[in-house]
Length: 106
View 1 (cartoon, rainbow, N blue to C red):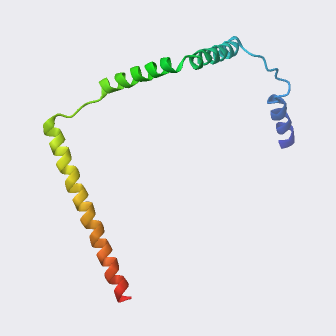
View 2: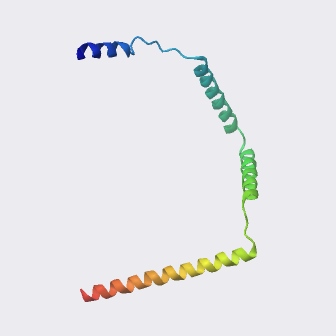
View 3: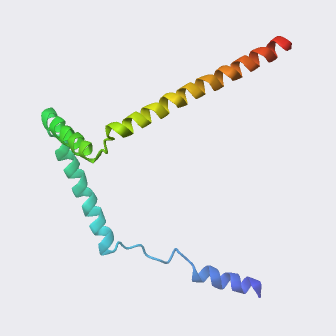
């Protein structure tokens, strides 16, 4: 009984008999990818000065998006950074001294 069920399932899901045909959507996708390749070739053919101008335009637009801190915030951030650097320096100095003491004892 189990063998008969296996055969029915194998026949039901036989992928050899299924024909592969491209749908209209798949053919449209292929066409759009070829168009994109042509567009990238056009970009590559531009001169070095044009590419530099496009780059500068991109940099300028990104600078407009940056949030620049005011003087009060800048002082706060600077003090916090200096305190953090001093703390880390003292922490690693203390660990170095502790390991040096352990090394002399051993």
